Image (cartoon, rainbow, N blue to C red; front, side):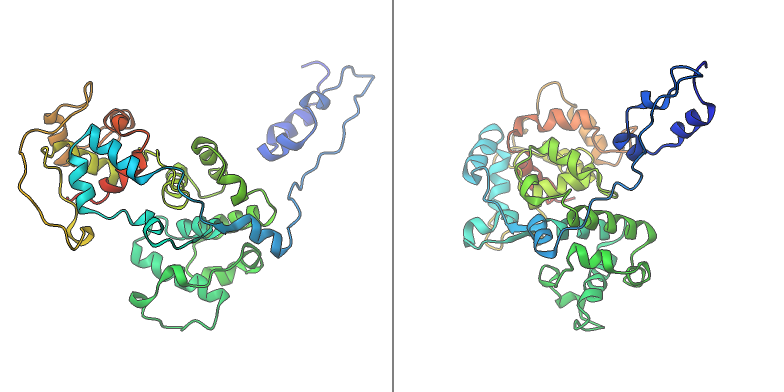
Amino acid sequence: MKGVKPNTVRRSSRLSLKEKRIGPPLEAEFEPSAHKKAKVEPRVIDSELPLLPEDKVKLCTTLNQPKLSFSIQEARQHLCSIDSRFASLFAQLDLKVYDELRSGKVKELNLFRVLTTSILGQQISWLAARSIMYKFCRLFAPDLPLQPNLDAVNKDELPFPTPLQVLKATDDELRRAGLSTAKIKYVRDVARRFSDGRLDVRKIIHMNPEACITELTQVKGVGRWTAEMLLMFALRSPDILPVGDLGVQRGIVKFYLSNSAGPKISERKRKDDYVHHDESKAPGFLPSNSLSLEQLVSRSQGNKTKKHMYLDPEEMSVLAAPWAPYRSVACMFMWSIEG
């Protein structure tokens, strides 16, 4: 390849994506002739932004939970109008994620806490996640009891570290709290992004869902499902459909297999004052161009798709299409439908 330095080409192929993004145009690495060299500006290797002071970092992480961008009553009316089975579901279940509408209590949204907690709980049982969460918090609040009764601990009331505190902790300290090598890397990355301002809750709450997912999935250890859960539970976006969630898939299958009286909610989640009434046993509504009842029965019996799901994303999208623009609200019920 005439006019190209072999060593320069080899170095270019080894550059990380970060270097390529912040470096000079690639054309600067080529020489127009053997006698005239193009001037190459020095490359910035360390692109880390300076850390913000503690008060600025807090502004990036925490604010009062934004008010709902939609009406629960309108969501209820819409869902019940397109499928009568939702009337039974609303009668059985309180949507606790929207509780502050009834209590009037303003909650605090700490986005760093939400993301870090999600990372700590990945790929382990909820019991193990509860233990690691406590030990992680105790690392930064040593006055907490060494051997607590975890059944009596309210995880939402545990003192939580700031991003800057997490960055100051050593790997050995984080490892003693139960974090794996991968989770140490992930937690540090999310702490670093809040500490230098790349992540800012004040910006994220105003993003549309897809832009928010794109922003959050740049964090190491945060995939689309984690971003969708944050949108549904922390930011309370009304129209999220987590197509990769097996619990929602299973719930949708059972929802459409139920008759017009609707499916039953798990008893431990059902309202204490709910009284079941015998209703019509007529077949329920099934969206056109979707799976047949026979196929849904097969899926409910554990015969999953080639992608090892109860419903593939395309099937799930068709079945949930009538619920828009309140698919998040509908999915809250799907998790609670009895197995």
